[in-house]
Image 1 (cartoon, helix red, strand yellow):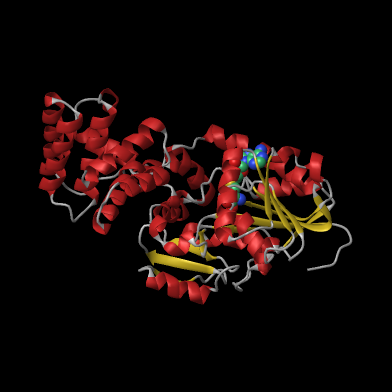
Image 2: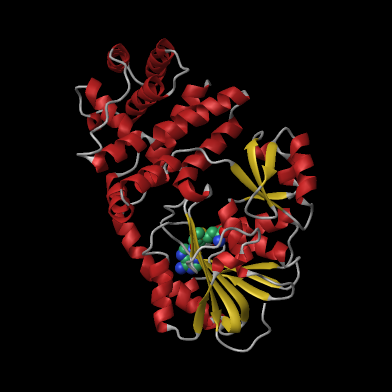
Length: 450
Ligand SMILES: C[S@@+](CC[C@H](N)C(=O)[O-])C[C@H]1O[C@@H](n2cnc3c(N)ncnc32)[C@H](O)[C@@H]1O
């Protein structure tokens, strides 16, 4: 199977079965024996076609008299892939984009659709030029939506809040492919030694500017094939996500609860910072996700971590006043990590976003009850929406006089320029890392300070 056909099947899986793009792609890559070049091309086709689907539909509508809803999903995806190559991939010859789409249609369509796909793509190829987007001065939301492949409701939200320039930079950065970042498993290896191992495994990495254990990897073989991963020498984790455990500040011997723990990126980091001593209890609503934490912990050689399936809203019924520190890495809209998941922007909607702050607040309140007097509570999300971040924490503080807000930015493991706000909001286009929010609170009461 060639890269285009493999890409088409992944795109179909994402659209028809709601498969997650990164997972469906990784599985397909594992099944195929593709060269590195073909693997990169397949990834580009899948991610580009899925991410830019609104713009591809809009471009297609210029060349296709039939309504796109009336076209079968597989043919529509062949057309989208073809248009994507014609308009957005400079190095693909026009003939290859058209001919290969026709070949795929022969296999997945019928004689009529072959003619149709051929006609639409040849028509597009004849008039091929740069897309002419709506005028940004008169239609800023349509312009940004089509130019940067984001749902219009999301653009409207950000335009109102941040203005055009900020919104444009944010959307542009959501479309850049972020480097892979890795957290050294300091229980097994130092960052310098891991760098040597990665180089020996044909990966290119440099130390992170944000954390002492972070590495930024610009080139690497398929992750599953890397012995250093299997040996548990690192965990894949974004740099901003690695900051959370540092802000929590776990100490060896303590009892820590990670209320929304799966798949375990932060729980396992906390355990490493505690040098595998004390106890980390990772809870999550879903048992199958807890299995991922256990797998990760085993691979990383962590034995101070336990898991428990439970609704974090009820955490205080079991662990009231017991934990030295509690992390609430809350379920959220994930709008800070759109650059990592090309399909996720099309899975969100405003109704879903509106429901989140109530759940986040309920988890935060219950988790707060589990913190010992003098202990620490950290609330984090991978979103940039104030309703899920500052508003949740401010609402909590307004009703909980037993907690005070501390300055998260002062606890950075690698010093950074000081920000005036105590709560930390990172943006991909400003900070170059995933959009993340971190707030640290201390429960009033006696306890040895840290
Ligand atoms: C942002 S993810 C956590 C990521 C994790 N901390 C890490 O670093 O790998 C949020 C998690 O909250 C879980 N979750 C959602 N609702 C929950 C609830 N009511 N109680 C406990 N966990 C919940 C989800 O299953 C998801 O695994």
